[in-house]
Length: 130
Image (cartoon, rainbow, N blue to C red; front, side, top):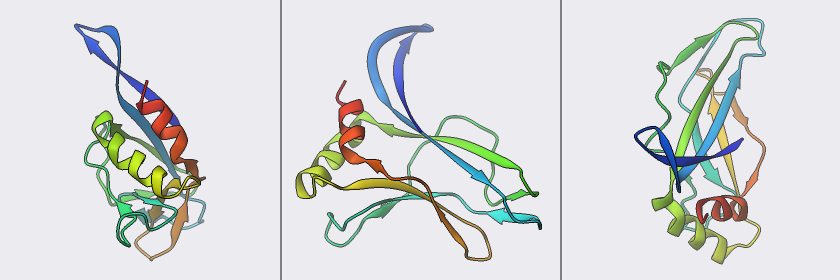
Protein backbone atom coordinates (compact mmCIF):
# COMPACT_ATOMS: atom_id res chain seq x y z
CA UNK A 1 0.00 0.00 0.00
CA UNK A 2 1.09 3.59 -0.61
CA UNK A 3 0.78 6.32 1.99
CA UNK A 4 1.88 9.93 1.61
CA UNK A 5 4.34 11.01 4.30
CA UNK A 6 3.96 14.68 5.19
CA UNK A 7 6.76 16.80 6.59
CA UNK A 8 6.18 17.96 10.15
CA UNK A 9 7.55 20.88 12.13
CA UNK A 10 7.35 20.50 15.91
CA UNK A 11 4.69 17.83 15.48
CA UNK A 12 2.48 19.93 13.17
CA UNK A 13 1.98 18.92 9.56
CA UNK A 14 3.38 21.55 7.19
CA UNK A 15 1.56 20.25 4.10
CA UNK A 16 4.81 19.52 2.28
CA UNK A 17 5.18 15.95 1.00
CA UNK A 18 8.32 14.35 2.39
CA UNK A 19 7.88 11.14 0.45
CA UNK A 20 5.70 8.11 -0.08
CA UNK A 21 5.52 5.27 2.40
CA UNK A 22 5.31 1.84 0.83
CA UNK A 23 4.03 -0.74 3.34
CA UNK A 24 5.22 -4.28 2.66
CA UNK A 25 3.60 -7.19 4.51
CA UNK A 26 5.20 -10.64 4.69
CA UNK A 27 3.10 -13.57 5.90
CA UNK A 28 4.35 -17.12 6.46
CA UNK A 29 1.76 -19.39 4.85
CA UNK A 30 3.86 -22.54 5.30
CA UNK A 31 3.17 -24.92 8.19
CA UNK A 32 6.87 -24.86 9.11
CA UNK A 33 8.68 -21.78 10.45
CA UNK A 34 10.40 -19.79 7.71
CA UNK A 35 13.12 -17.16 7.69
CA UNK A 36 12.60 -14.21 5.34
CA UNK A 37 15.25 -11.79 4.10
CA UNK A 38 14.84 -8.05 3.51
CA UNK A 39 12.48 -7.29 0.60
CA UNK A 40 13.73 -5.56 -2.52
CA UNK A 41 11.89 -3.67 -5.25
CA UNK A 42 11.80 -4.01 -9.02
CA UNK A 43 10.43 -2.06 -11.93
CA UNK A 44 8.55 -4.12 -14.52
CA UNK A 45 10.85 -3.17 -17.40
CA UNK A 46 14.57 -2.59 -17.89
CA UNK A 47 14.51 1.19 -18.11
CA UNK A 48 17.94 1.82 -16.57
CA UNK A 49 20.38 0.10 -18.93
CA UNK A 50 19.18 -3.36 -17.97
CA UNK A 51 18.94 -2.65 -14.24
CA UNK A 52 15.54 -2.60 -12.62
CA UNK A 53 15.98 -3.92 -9.07
CA UNK A 54 17.00 -1.88 -6.05
CA UNK A 55 16.69 -1.78 -2.29
CA UNK A 56 15.38 1.29 -0.49
CA UNK A 57 17.81 3.25 1.61
CA UNK A 58 15.41 4.06 4.43
CA UNK A 59 12.32 2.81 6.18
CA UNK A 60 9.97 3.87 8.93
CA UNK A 61 11.56 3.17 12.33
CA UNK A 62 10.75 -0.32 13.55
CA UNK A 63 12.38 -3.18 15.46
CA UNK A 64 12.58 -5.66 12.60
CA UNK A 65 15.86 -7.43 11.99
CA UNK A 66 16.17 -9.49 8.81
CA UNK A 67 16.34 -12.38 8.32
CA UNK A 68 13.20 -12.68 10.42
CA UNK A 69 11.72 -16.01 11.58
CA UNK A 70 7.97 -16.36 11.22
CA UNK A 71 5.72 -19.13 12.48
CA UNK A 72 2.73 -20.25 10.41
CA UNK A 73 0.35 -17.32 9.87
CA UNK A 74 2.65 -14.73 11.44
CA UNK A 75 3.10 -11.44 9.62
CA UNK A 76 5.61 -8.61 9.65
CA UNK A 77 5.05 -5.19 8.13
CA UNK A 78 7.69 -2.63 7.25
CA UNK A 79 7.06 0.77 5.70
CA UNK A 80 9.76 1.78 3.24
CA UNK A 81 10.23 5.43 2.34
CA UNK A 82 10.37 6.60 -1.25
CA UNK A 83 11.67 10.15 -0.75
CA UNK A 84 10.78 13.11 -2.95
CA UNK A 85 14.42 12.98 -4.11
CA UNK A 86 13.58 9.73 -5.96
CA UNK A 87 11.02 11.56 -8.14
CA UNK A 88 13.45 12.13 -11.07
CA UNK A 89 14.23 8.40 -11.20
CA UNK A 90 10.53 7.47 -11.34
CA UNK A 91 9.81 10.21 -13.91
CA UNK A 92 12.65 8.89 -16.06
CA UNK A 93 11.27 5.35 -15.84
CA UNK A 94 7.79 6.59 -16.75
CA UNK A 95 9.13 8.57 -19.73
CA UNK A 96 10.73 5.40 -21.13
CA UNK A 97 7.74 3.13 -20.51
CA UNK A 98 4.33 4.66 -19.76
CA UNK A 99 3.05 1.32 -18.44
CA UNK A 100 5.97 0.59 -16.10
CA UNK A 101 5.01 -0.75 -12.68
CA UNK A 102 6.74 -1.17 -9.33
CA UNK A 103 6.56 -4.21 -7.04
CA UNK A 104 8.07 -5.55 -3.84
CA UNK A 105 9.71 -8.97 -3.72
CA UNK A 106 10.18 -10.99 -0.54
CA UNK A 107 12.33 -14.10 -0.42
CA UNK A 108 12.72 -16.76 2.21
CA UNK A 109 16.05 -18.37 3.00
CA UNK A 110 15.01 -21.49 1.05
CA UNK A 111 14.99 -19.37 -2.11
CA UNK A 112 11.23 -19.07 -2.67
CA UNK A 113 10.26 -15.62 -3.95
CA UNK A 114 6.95 -13.83 -3.35
CA UNK A 115 5.81 -10.79 -5.36
CA UNK A 116 3.42 -8.04 -4.30
CA UNK A 117 0.75 -6.53 -6.48
CA UNK A 118 2.05 -4.15 -9.13
CA UNK A 119 1.84 -0.42 -8.41
CA UNK A 120 1.80 1.84 -11.49
CA UNK A 121 4.82 4.15 -11.46
CA UNK A 122 2.45 6.88 -12.68
CA UNK A 123 0.73 6.67 -9.28
CA UNK A 124 4.05 7.02 -7.45
CA UNK A 125 5.01 10.03 -9.60
CA UNK A 126 1.61 11.62 -8.96
CA UNK A 127 1.88 11.17 -5.19
CA UNK A 128 5.50 12.34 -4.98
CA UNK A 129 4.65 15.45 -7.05
CA UNK A 130 2.08 16.79 -4.57
